[in-house]
Length: 486
Image 1 (cartoon, helix red, strand yellow):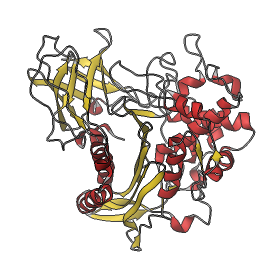
Image 2 (tube, one colour; image 1 turned 60 degrees about the vertical axis):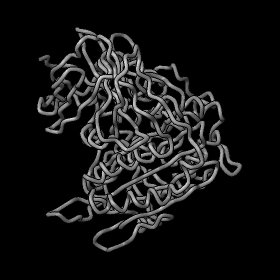
Image 3 (cartoon, one colour; image 1 turned 90 degrees about the vertical axis):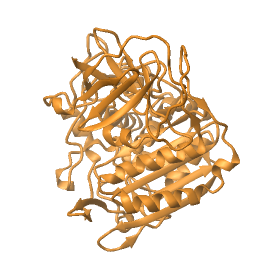
């Protein structure tokens, strides 16, 4: 998910000033009225997005109280053939939401005693990941996206003949080690693919076979696969990716992601994703078939690392969207053509999955719909404004720590942080400006005409003069380092 698209469609607002030592967000109780009329609410939103957000088609499924509340399809799976989205049978690409299956598979092997969370990953693989300053990468560092590595590029190709088997890709594309593992989160597709390879090595089963035998089949997810090309039985049901050409959406050929298979090559239907959510919300079992023990599900959803205290971080593979009121965990996913999100509220027994195909504006649509569902189901009030004394935030150019360090950094992509007025921070990214108002010492809340209920994004500076950084509540998987002070 790009920083710009995420931030431009987040919903935030502010209340009357108040002096505070800290500025926690306040939460409104979830009630039956939050769910009542939800399907109509979503129908109306997506209808507007098809008209205004380059959306070709979409699926939305919501589960609550151990059952599917609704599963709806919208628009067209293929613009050229005018094929409508079938809510029950059309496949979408969940992108990095696929990683939740990989972390489940890894957790199964941890549960069975074949993998130790604190072991050096080299114990389980047949090639060498170099140490950094004498320290290895542990299995738990993969789950917290903190292996201290560069990101990798070239992971999506346009035809199967250009694919490198993921086992070979991992061996020939080991990223540079940049900082000690377990100290800083910088989202790692390589790390998630490595986790899948560890499952393959210790189980003795090819990864795609493993997840089918031990996750998909037990849960009745019969239309979900990591395989590329798609199995012949599923291919007719696959939604097309699309691009905008001269103001018109045009179908694209299938994207191939299996060079990093465990990190994002899945295709799935909305009903299959609903079954996975139901299993996780019920402690790892569905219809009498158990894939994980409740304690292992709790481990996956429990905090492991955060870049800064006071903002959400990473659980064990799951992203933390909200710490409380209720706690929200899940994962976002983007390929070039599909934009998805899966959110669980374990203490409330509620979850939802959304996926869009269309032009680049459909990424904004995904984020808008996710935030609208969160605001409707789990409403917040914004944090009070801060009126106490505090140091001015460090201004200047900030650079994302999640990038391919083998390529020269492009200063044009840096985020520019300025202060147009007291207590207001302005972040400019590729010409798009987002304003934040102060809610605590070095902590700010986005200013928008937000819908009631939020969610309300936050920005926090930290690190000190030797390494100033800022993180966003909406981006627990990365941080931004000051590279040029004003």
